[in-house]
Structure formats: C-alpha cells, structure tokens
Length: 171
Ligand SMILES: CC(C)(COP(=O)(O)OP(=O)(O)OC[C@H]1O[C@@H](n2cnc3c(N)ncnc32)[C@H](O)[C@@H]1OP(=O)(O)O)[C@@H](O)C(=O)NCCC(=O)NCCS
Image (cartoon, rainbow, N blue to C red; front, side, top):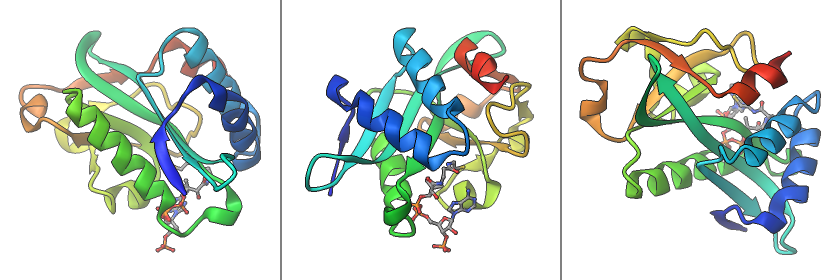
C-alpha cells in the first residue's frame, strides 16, 4: 500500500473508485469538474501493489465570507470496500493535513459525519459560528473544521462556501 499525491495518470482509477464507493456518479463528476477548473489544491491517493487506486481524498479551496483565508475543503473521501475499516480513510486525511500544513494552508473544512471526523480531530464549525449554505453532496452532513494554524479561527465567523462545481454536482 502506497499513499501519495495524485498524479494525472490516476484520474481513471480515481473516477472508477468514486463510482463504486458512492451511490451515484455525482462525486466522480465533481472531481472531474474540479480538476478541469484547476480547483484541486491537493489530491491524495492510496494504491495497491499493482498501482490500482483503492483510496482517495481531494482538497479544494473554500471561501470564508467571500474571502480567501487559505482554507480548503475535504471532499470527496473514499476507500474501496475491500479496504475499509483499516484506517486507510484516516491515513489519507492525515497525509493531506500534513502536506497542506507544509504548504501553509490555514484550515481544512469538511461536510460529513460528525462522529467520524470528530474522532480524527475535526471540530464542529458551529463552535466558531461558522456555517455552510452549500450542503455539498450530503444533505445530512455537518460542517467541521481542522485548523492547521490556530489563529485562523480568531475573529472569524460566517459562511464557508465551496466552489461552483459543488453546486452543480449536488443538483
Ligand atoms: C468513509 C470511508 C472513506 C472510511 O474509510 P475507512 O478506511 O474504512 O476509514 P477508517 O478505517 O479510517 O475509519 C473507519 C471507522 O469509521 C467509521 N465510519 C466509516 N464510514 C463512516 C461514515 N460514513 N459515517 C460514520 N462513521 C463512519 C467506521 O464505522 C469505522 O469505525 P470503527 O473502526 O469504530 O468501526 C469509507 O467507508 C467510504 O469510502 N465510504 C463510502 C464513501 C463515503 O461515504 N465517503 C464520505 C465519508 S463522510
């Protein structure tokens, strides 16, 4: 198992994984549009011994009250069924957080399951009076945040907005 940054040749494997991991092709379409629009800040893949993609995490820019504060949103996250429950999801997220931290990004947001992401150190965004109008692809999702630079949460509240492809693909 190898966890590394996405490269162009991974695109087909990522699309296949996303179509298998989610009920519809919305997430696969989302990544396609994000990539076309140059909005993938970081993509992390897990590959098996044959180089096949078995895990993926994408990070793309989010705006805070219309302002670029060097925050990114994690979405989508997927692990192939046969590889689940082995902390691969966690490893993909932590690899992403490490790299983003190295490149001085300030925070990572996610719209997802509160229990899963809280266990990984994400905090409910509502603690900081942050919310998201864009429910992304999951109407039941909670907005959570992982600060990479603690001060980024000082004097901030309001709307966390995902990029246009999220609106398009959620329809
Ligand atoms: C979510 C997903 C990426 C987790 O991958 P993984 O490699 O199994 O994750 P980890 O091994 O790091 O963590 C597994 C733990 O998270 C829990 N978990 C997995 N998916 C979850 C979800 N959607 N909501 C809540 N908890 C979840 C599991 O119950 C497990 O907990 P346990 O070890 O106490 O049993 C994988 O299940 C997946 O691809 N699901 C389909 C796509 C999806 O729903 N992605 C969005 C996630 S918000």
